[in-house]
Image (cartoon, rainbow, N blue to C red):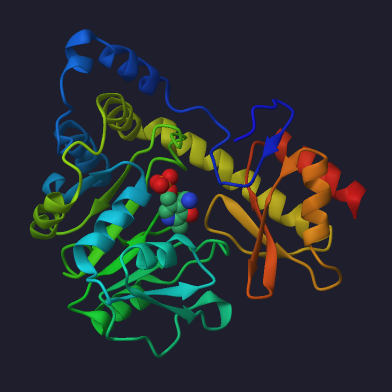
Length: 328
Ligand code: PMP
């Protein structure tokens, strides 16, 4: 993180808008000696009740995490033995491979089929499969029917549907939890709820699965202040819908203007856009943007490269577009 106020950060998919005002009230209320002196509630029952109501899921089927990366770590530790196998599509989130390596497990990257869809063949010997939906860096989605087919194929091993960006999409997999016994959905408050600094994520799965995962997590993996912030954030669904609507609107405008500048922009269901060019390399564009204090993410997957640009405010999008117009 750079502290220069002139830097425009469009490289890690943070939310440009502040969190709900209720988050600040909740954190202030939690800042008492009596709260800070004691350990937090280990399962985050107040958060689970709030999220259960907001998302219409069983609170006993929610596992809290110190960011959804913590949840992905807990899942890997719980399901993957040393020498085991972790499977994920590629190009996608690069953490899955690191988690496999830390666990002393093997990693198999399965290339997406055309249009960022799932291929017909998928390994059936994995101990866990991770599927980000929407995917990063593409922002594309796999339909729920295909998710269900993949879950059946890898069963009884778990399919982890990493829904870090699902809050910006039209549909999500929560309705499949319970009906598809080996499906585990992961969520974060880092993106749509503007709380990347708080570190809070969670999993939604069957209560019996969550009871086992609780044995693997650190007893107190979420602190008093983050639990207070997270519960307040999910309770304020009206504020959440307002922020989401603004980002979705800017996403549409940014995509159209980037396309007009000559980028191949993949239609996105997330809060970022995957931009490539046929006519020139994009790495120098990224470097020149950086020199002008506009940070986007340059991604290179074995030679398949592009720029992943976070959707900011309208003013931020304008600054990015002005710089790009000048550079190009
Ligand atoms: N999954 C995906 C696909 C992501 O892009 C990210 C953000 N880097 C995460 C999970 C983790 O987010 P967090 O730990 O902030 O919840």
